[in-house]
Length: 94
Image 1 (cartoon, helix red, strand yellow):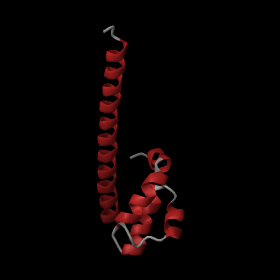
Image 2 (cartoon, rainbow, N blue to C red; image 1 turned 135 degrees about the vertical axis):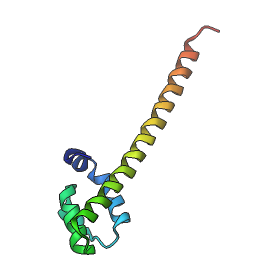
Image 3 (cartoon, helix red, strand yellow; image 1 turned 180 degrees about the vertical axis):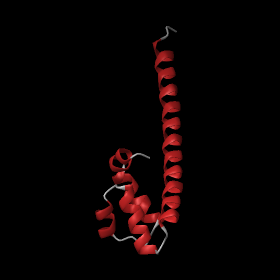
């Protein structure tokens, strides 16, 4: 994810980050504030991880998050298509 994607989605990501890394405090999350590099730094500090390990875990987190977003977008697309079909069917003369 890009820096802008992290910052833009932070309100949603914040809770998921807290679930994934439960030792992070609200103060830690306030400092992170949607910045990936800050998350990696906090993981290193709080969990004693090497930078490579912290980066790997964040990348895995990003992949899972993006897969959820893709799944949600796909489901939304199906609902939109179904609604369009209903509208088209309703407009057809009987």
